[in-house]
Image 1 (cartoon, rainbow, N blue to C red):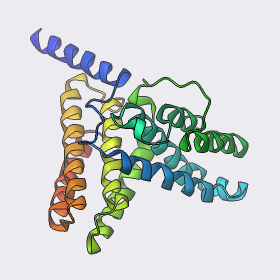
Image 2 (cartoon, rainbow, N blue to C red; image 1 turned 120 degrees about the vertical axis):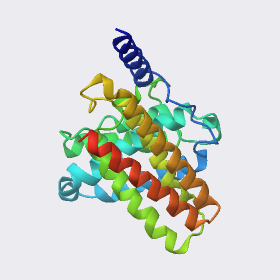
Image 3 (cartoon, one colour; image 1 turned 180 degrees about the vertical axis):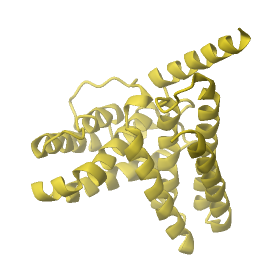
Length: 244
C-alpha cells in the first residue's frame, strides 16, 4: 500500500511538472539569455536555408526541418520563462507558438507560414496573443529530441579540439540543458509508473552534466568539458537500457 502511495505521489509530481513551468527556474545561472538568443537566430537562419525551395523543404522535412522547429519551440518557452526575457527582442511565447504551427504533416505553404511567424517573434514584431505558460511535454517529440541531442554532442566534441568559449560553443551544451527540461516532462516512454523516479533521476543528471559542460566550455576548459560529456554518455546509456 505504501509503495502504491509513493508511485501515485510521483505521478502527480511529474504531471504537475509537465503542465506548468520548467522543472527548475530558467535563469541566468542555468542558461544565459544570450546563448538562447544565439540559438534562436542561428536556427531561424538555418530554417530559411532548409526551406529555400519546396524541393529542399521536402528533402529535409522529416529530419532537419522538424528538429529545427522543435528546438525553437523549446527555446521560445525557455525565453518566455527566463528571468532576463525582457533584455532581448525575441518574444519567447510567440516564438514557441509559431514553431508549434509546424508538424510532420505540414506542407510547404504551412511551413512557410510558421517560418514567417517565427521571424516576427524573433524580431519582436509579433502581434499574436501568446500565453507565457505552456506544457513542457508538448514542445518537441522524443525522436527529434534524441536526434538533436546526438547531433549537438558531436558538435561539442568537435569544438573541444580548439575551444574558444563562444556563445555558439557553450550554446550547444545549453541547448541540451533546455532539451533536458522537456525530456524530464515528457514521460510517455515510462510504461511502468514504478520507473518514474529513474526517469526523473536520469533526466536531472543529464541536465546537470550538460550545465557543467557548458560552464567548462565558457571557461575554455576542454578537459573538464569532455569529462562531463563522458559522464552524460554513461547516464544516457543507463537510461536507454531501461527506456527504449
